Amino acid sequence: MTVQLAEYDELKRIADEELDKAYIPYSHFPVGAALLSETGDIFPGCNIENAAFGSTMCAERTAIFSAIAKGQHHFKAMVISGRTEGAIAPCGSCRQVMVEWFDKNMPIYLTNTSGVVVKTDLAHLLPGSFDDLK
Ligand SMILES: O=c1ccn([C@H]2C[C@H](O)[C@@H](CO)O2)c(=O)[nH]1
Ligand SMILES: [Zn+2]
Image (tube, rainbow, N blue to C red; front, side, top):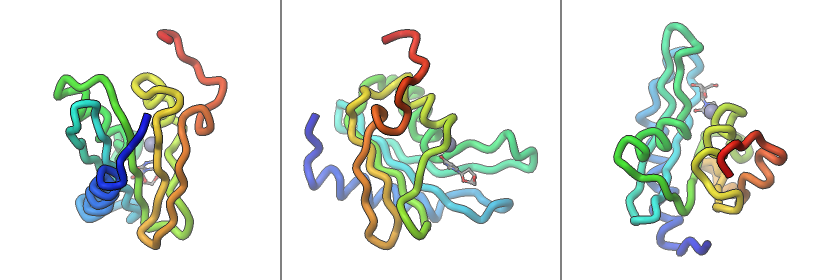
């Protein structure tokens, strides 16, 4: 599965843009995501916190669930961004949700706003995952 450089650049731009949309009154830790569907549409996501901390939604799942709600089931790439020192890393819950929707080798780019980019996939992020359907 190939992702064009222009597609990556657009995903990265949107993931970075989402950092300013994150609702983070509790952690002050913004996360941005952008998901490219097979149809070429891009679904943005930011983290959205809640006073009941467990009701917080991560940026990655915001993007994935928004795409599903639009009827998209097939995806080509995801970019995640953080204002972190190194590359941002998705939490365990997000990795499990990704397994439900992404191919094991779909490119996932873990980035920050200082130029770090790590290209990975679910085979590396969640090896040996529980995966009933595939
Ligand atoms: O994969 C992750 C991990 C954490 N966060 C958010 C949740 C919370 O708002 C903040 C601190 O955990 O970062 C994400 O958006 N994605
Ligand atoms: Zn998460």
